Image (cartoon, rainbow, N blue to C red; front, side, top):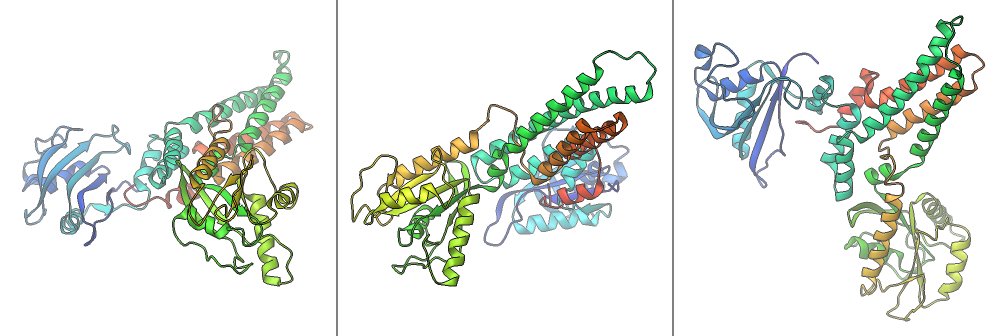
Amino acid sequence: MDGSTIYALGTPAPSRLQPGALAVIRLSGPRAAEALIFLTEPHAFERAQSARDPALPPPRRMVVRTLIEPLTAEEIDRGLVVWFEAPYSETGETMAELHLHGGRAVVNAAMAAIQQLGFCRLAEPGEFTRRAFEHNKLDLTEAEAIADLVAAETDQQRRQALQQMDGALHRLYEDWRTLGLRALAHLEAAIDFPDEDLPTGLGEEVRASILQLMSEIAAHLDDKRGERLRHGLSIAIIGPPNAGKSSLLNLLARRDAAIVSETAGTTRDVIEVHLDLGGWPVVVADTAGLRESGDAIEQEGVRRALARAGSADLRLLVLDATTDWKAALAELTSGGARWDAAHDIAVVNKIDLQPVDAAGVVPLSARSGTGLAELLARLQQSAGLLMEQGAAAAPPLTRVRHREALIEAHSALARALDAPEVALAAEDLRLAMRALGRITGTVRIDELLDVIFRDFCIGK
């Protein structure tokens, strides 16, 4: 941080077609309160003697003020202002907020007035949150949760972000780090005081701590709930050609996302749509029909379809009610694409042409929409089972950055367990604790901070 006072529009920028009812401009830094005086009190500097001059309202209390152009004292708008004393603010610095009318002219004039002060600069993306991190108001996992909350599109994403903002991941990782540091301290004692009578069983205690850490980190890495929730549950629509896969995709998307044709093999590549499925974010992919083909392009489409089916969290197998769908169901669920009977769903389409009454499948008419409600209920049930697995246990990891650091920590712990010398075990344990510390920001790497905060929106 350069010690400057920053400012930014904290609400969406108004446009000619979409003016906002309200606009909030935020300031943070050592001269934020001074800026507030300049912007609301004509000739304030002649009267102001300190930051607690009567020109300032009481901290943390919103008051009505007239916003003025500081050089001419021309009125810009009349709104609410508030300021916060350091360190009792979101960033840990002195902060001020202007709550104004949201028209473009008001916002532009207010931003220009702040710029005229000469001692404030426009904030960079994520700089408010980064300053909160720098002043120990939150750790990196909580800062990332703020970005996730801003980007949340479904209720479940919002809930996960709030849980992480509350420090669930921070507490988990810090508990692991505390356990590891205690084991490391015991190893260091054995190195530094080899001739002392150290407590018996110290080696077994260190080994037990390392094994516990490895077990809990491995279970955490196996839990995909958090990443699924951030990026969307992957659902692959598979099945033979002309079964109605593209029609089903369009029905779920409620728009013509995929081309529908009576010609077999129309879908060659994977087509994706993003949906909100009862609060769960999902990515539904339409794939090429599964069949033998002499066409090289269609063969590539089938290969991609099988690959997507294999990597998907959930599969929708669409079959044609007018064909021998039971034989096709047995064939496709026994080999080829991976099939999980506990979560995957078989759909028999075109029941408007051939009624179907069979257990274990969802009858559907993609043309009329009959059966869609049952299919959506089954999808929500399967998605909920996948996303809530282990929900009562530790909070799930949410980012690739966390996963990479945890894999590094787990590998270092494994080396420490098999190290031929105590000094080597201590060094590997130290590397494991350093990897855990990078997740929360206890171990500082400025290049990493730049990567994390540059993806934030300006004003946050």
